[in-house]
Length: 438
Figure 1: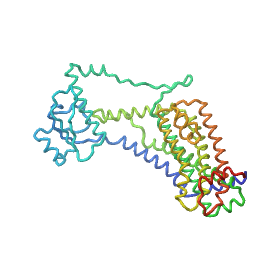
Figure 2: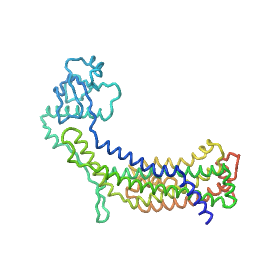
Figure 3: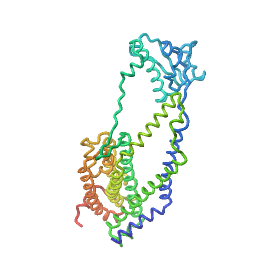
Figure 4: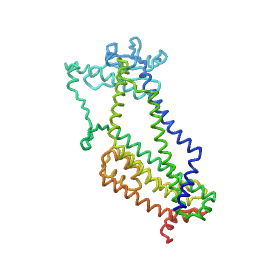
């Protein structure tokens, strides 16, 4: 046990003292918060994009002007002394961003087509939708007029139901927000996916470097191969946990500092006219809903499960990566070919997780969250949706048992492969090592 602790200490200190560790540990939170600050600054400052659009309205759809209630923020200029063929060639030279051509329309109650928007490059989706919304609103009004229905009557008939999601836990009631559940599930799942790949491959590269530099030969003379492998896996895993803990502390601290310099703005300070005010007010309302939704997240369960599945998934895959690193020689292509079967279940887990977030109780999602090779990623995608405690216990138990099994299996491969040089090892040969008696 003392020898394993010495290996853990060596692996941990060697990596923590590297400049690259300090850079990634301190730099990543600063970059994340920096992007966050820029996003807030961009969202608060400025207004919607304004485009100047030349319009030939042969259907007299707009009646020569745009109703301010339907103004989408663009500047529409109605041209009456130009033909469509001539204007679509020179509208850009005349200072317009786009040219909107509305041909004659005999009956607004029927399907309206052949309206064309000319541009020098593909129109941005948001801008195209704004113009379409403006046109559709006017056509709807004309159809209502032809049916002798006022706009007020139409609004009273039109249904726009919004359902409030209430999460009941005993006597406590919280408001749930579907978008928050999706974001938390996806972020937790993709973090475990990335961390398992990053630190798992770090274990493999560490084993390969020690083997190629003949350091492993010296260490194996005083430490058993299995002790060396286990110490390396735990040591590098401890580096990952340390880095992750520092990231959490730094991100929370930087967010607190950021809130001092960028206080939340008041809705009453927004301008009260134009499309920009309504859009910004809607964004603020969404932000408030997100803040409320985050209070409904079972953070205790999420944090505990995240740590457990990260440690369990990392230990399981790190043992496999260590086994591969022990049999690989100088050829990097050989390493890529050997590691591909190990990475496939991780990638499969990520694919299932993206499906489980939207449909958490399908047979595929349940299987993926219990199967040990995919459960670290998939279960984090399901936890926000009240997964039965029996499934969580089975998933965790199978993950622990499979780590023990794969660690034992990888140890047998590691013991033989770490001292083998100049020979290309196949999967068939590695399997033979595992069934061979010690």
